[in-house]
Length: 301
Ligand SMILES: [Zn+2]
Image 1 (cartoon, protein in one colour):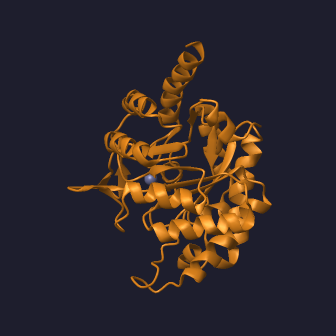
Image 2 (image 1 turned 30 degrees about the vertical axis):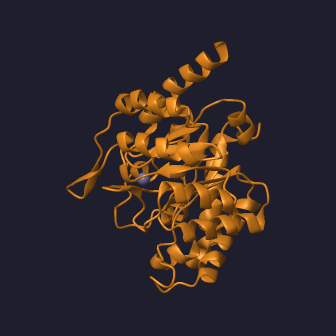
Image 3 (image 1 turned 30 degrees about the horizontal axis):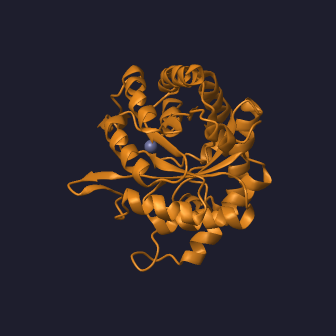
């Protein structure tokens, strides 16, 4: 399969997949359960989710390894299963997609806070990411997706972990921003401008934002990224902000609404459009149509 960065450079816009958590909840995962424990208990569900997103038209399919760092797994006493959990996450997706889409290895926050604000030494966090990501490199994933980060130092440690194991595997690095009266910042105080500069300097190939916002805010965040970014952009928006009803998160942005708004992301110059919390294969299929039309029009012009 052609390198993803070459396809983007040639002008093609790609489609990411949608939420993992939302899909797992709809298949019976409880909100207080460790989502990665499912990899050990019922990996068939991982194949079902990958199949739905592949059929929906996603070019990138993510693994259920978001919380698969040993530091994070330790919170569920599963750190001894780090290798097994991450390997099953990858193999389940690969079994479904072969090389018909890119296998994007999801790597989320450790759940720990670095010193001096928290109690975690940078080297401990780095080693944790290395242990998780080594499984991904050994299993030949196509991309590493470091996502939902709010601390730039944690993002950079994850990127450093990848680059210590592979000099050339493409890295996607995305952060989650909140609107404030002074613009968009992560809860740890990182601006879009700072994210752009530091993620690229650390070695990310594709940057952007995922989670935390519906599509309208994501359009604003994308415009801000476009001002500073020197590499391709990815946006994975939530289907709005969740309302919790009976312990269940309800998202209100329907597929066609998100797809219509995705046109704005294309106008801004976003290179990969996918979804985050609340999005399903139906959102991805609707976005796929808008992106296909864009790619076709571009080829004909
Ligand atoms: Zn999300």
